[in-house]
Length: 107
Image (cartoon, rainbow, N blue to C red; front, side, top):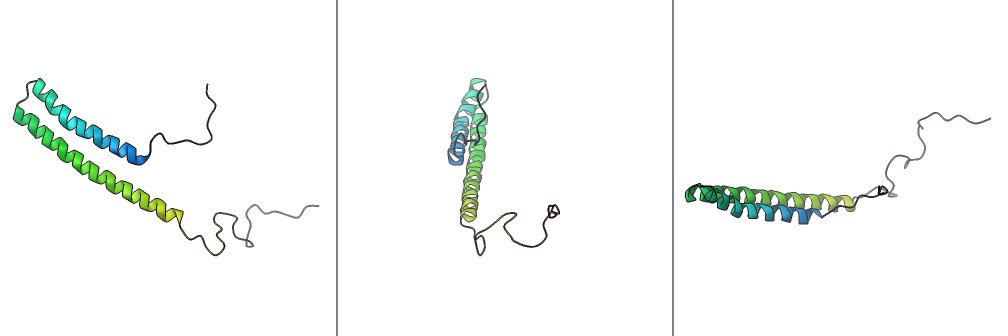
């Protein structure tokens, strides 16, 4: 059994997976009408299916690109976010005030 890894590495970047999805969708726009004609559907019915699949593929492509741009913008905003006067963040960054866990002086 392989040892567990500390960090998970992504298999493929998001851009490549979106391109793969669009490629497979375009392939199905060609394959589905061919199969429909092979099983006896009329050419008009197969052409209508091809047009419908192409429309859905185009809309999905636009939505994927918009999502990628939004994700890239979010990453860029997080990368250069201003963290305050001294650049400290997170719990324990502030000094003074109340402390949880009531520590008492030792003997």
